[in-house]
Image (cartoon, rainbow, N blue to C red):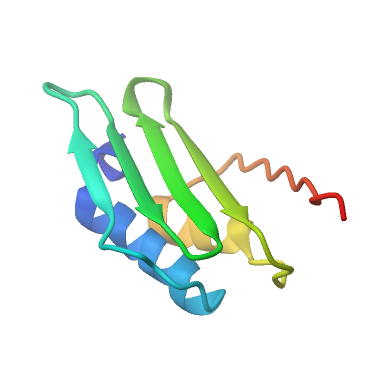
Length: 99
């Protein structure tokens, strides 16, 4: 739960995704930390589209959305989320954009 409230750790996750997939940001990530022991919402616009996260520490859940309007290599979501957030149950859904 603590990792899902930690903006620095989530920022590191965003930085790794952006760097390792060679994405181009239009601004620094914006973060909103909900009061109490609630979660965090993060968002960054990319020239390719956007990267967002919404965390729910009370449920041990984070939803990450990467929308990318160009082909990109697969990213090791399972490995990175386990390392950076301590995730143990990771489900990745990839939707290919129609041409």
